[in-house]
Image (cartoon, rainbow over all chains, first blue to last red; front, side):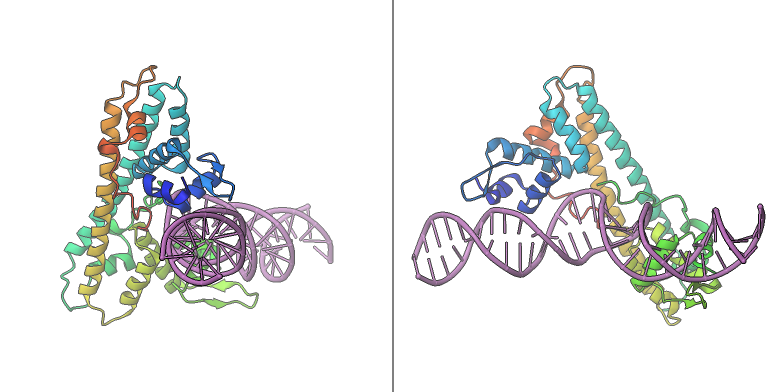
Length: 146
Length: 146
DNA sequence: CTTGACCTTCCCATCATTGGAAGGTCCATA
DNA sequence: TATGGACCTTCCAATGATGGGAAGGTCAAG
């Protein structure tokens, strides 16, 4: 099976399959005589695993750990559970950050009459500071999760 | 005032100040005889504006639009409000994505006994698919906001 | 034999941010 | 005055996951 078929069956683009190989998330597959990568059912299985983990917001590095546990027959479910719960905590932290930003903005927008007049507390708050527009400690690490 | 002081007073790193200048978010400031960038109070004001907007999760491009409105005395508050509410909607969408991921993971983790035994529904769900581990349409555009 | 659909590798861009190297400037202190 | 350290400058690179594209090889159907 060529990379295009593997991509269709797994839902992972050919580009990303090569990328995952490059960064060591998956092992380099066998090659045909013509140099084409050749995949089999187990590779598709593995790629689907990766895609599902990505959909759950795990980073490539975290997936690497999960795949290790997956392949390790003597793995302890407690390890997997710990990783999953850590990830849940990270997701919750990000949720809180976003909620705080959204609340601040909603509050500002609610006080902006929104007609043609130029007065606008949103702009004023950004410009003059003070009040809810300065979380100061938030927004850090934004974009590090996945 | 040199760039280091501007960074301290505004809360924007010197690196980022130069970056914002490079991408055209701020105009190039005057230079001293020695070639050092020289900033005044209005520059600091502007940089604070940028930092607050970044803390609210606006992208540089969005901030550019906001600053345009800020500088434009005849701006309409409806424009600002529209941008703010669009951003709130984007934040809410991201919140929903993250909530869905977290719920799925929490569900899986709750069914993982988490002791030393190898059975683990988290890994099994990732490996075999089916069920909540396949949002399929989510996770797209994750990381595009801000 | 041509055409089109594949495949290969390699490079570049994204976005905001940080890091570092190499070199110039300024000021205080020994 | 010399020296050291704290600044400043520009330039280049890396991050993470992904997409885009060029240049060239391969294959199967028409």
